[in-house]
Every structure is written in C-alpha cells, then in structure tokens.
Length: 186
Image (cartoon, rainbow, N blue to C red; front, side, top):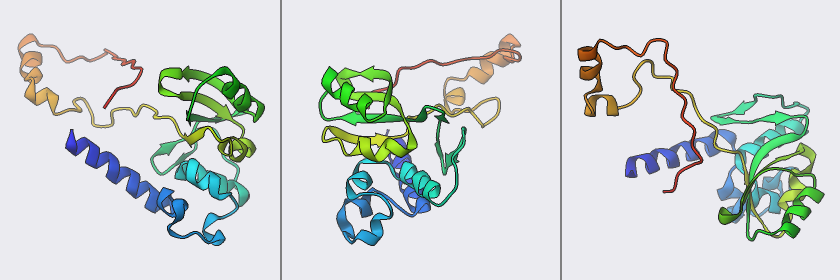
C-alpha cells in the first residue's frame, strides 16, 4: 500500500516537473503575475497542471485533438469540450444549474462525493473554475491497458496460477477479460 502511494506521488511529481507548471507554484510560492501565464490565479489553484498546460498550448496556436495526451494524462476532447472531474464544496440542483450556465455539460453525478464528471468547452474552463463552490477541475482517471504481456501481475506467482494453468493445460488464448469498476476507496 505504501509503495503504491509512493509511486502515485512520484508520477504526479514527475508530471508536474515535465509540464513546467504545477499546483505548488500556483498556490503562492511565487505570487508575481509572470508565473501565472495567460490564466488567472484562481484558475491556477483549481485547475490541474495538465489541463493548464494544454490550454497554454492552445493559446499558442496549437489546437487540441481527440485522443490528445500530455505526459501520462489522456485527454478526451470532442465537440462538446474536454471531459473532466469537477470537485464541489457542496452539491445541490442550484450548483448544477450554475455549472450548466457556464457551459458545463453534466455527464455523471456523484453527490455523496461532491463530484461530477462533465464536459467543458475549452474556452469556458476558466469561467467554471471561478465559481466559488468549485474545489478542483482535473482529468478523469482513465483505465490503462496491460502492456506487460501475457502475465502482468506479481499475483500470478504468489497464487501459483502458472502451475494450475500448466496442470490443466489451459493458456487463456482467445479469451478476453473485461473489468468494470466504479472506483475504489483508499
């Protein structure tokens, strides 16, 4: 568990360094306006570094396309906007109406977690971030396919499934496995 948390932290730190921007500088270690780029201080505090970087590329004339990825962050963009998670201080119908009034298209609601998944047009992200009840705007956690070959976990050796496969003469060839999850709680 500790190793997983450490790896998650290191990946996040590496992404912030690679992007050249991050929450640390946005939250006030360097308050001068030149560090804020073309976006407001409020936006820097609430919007993830990968989204800020993508928006800065856009202001430089680079148009994001469907399937874009910056570092390890995949971005799902279509005609309706960028798919994001919006963390909220509170949750009610009035707040949802204000989000929609700023251009957010609500896709999924998680009232118990004060979270919504939405699409926001790129030119409206700053307006949404300025709403007082918005805590953060970040990219959703998309699944990553197993790139390790036929066996991709240490669990295979621990559970001795390789021995079982050999004994039964099964390989799993031609079998597809899908995992559907609504998330996890640390």
